[in-house]
Image 1 (cartoon, rainbow, N blue to C red):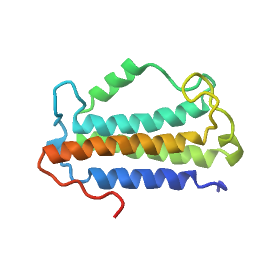
Image 2 (image 1 turned 180 degrees about the horizontal axis):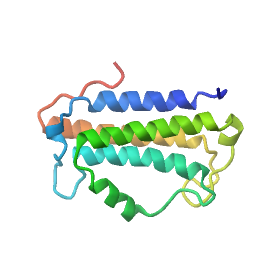
Image 3 (image 1 turned 90 degrees about the horizontal axis):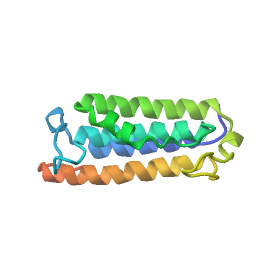
Length: 155
């Protein structure tokens, strides 16, 4: 068992994300305020993909991947809320498994590459939380546009 609480950080992040987005139903999956914007399902898929991106990049000798167009294409393929939520579940499980597989000292090591370069690997946890909070906010606006009331995530 690791002697750090990074898994707790991931679990809290996911709990807040799931609470904030539970007002959506499968029929809402394809809603986007404008055609070029991500749909509800794609917002969730993007948040999930980014959790994976942070975790993978922290331990990649080349750092964070920068193939953003390819990443967006993967997200744009998501049309189902079920699939998007399953992706978030997998991404968070992978992140927790990564935490369990590494000692605390490994999270003090610097991230390679150009994005977050030199930051300690543990910086990904705050970045993941901030990024998912950003998308929770966007999804709260989507919910309001659909006539729904997004629940308070911290209740």
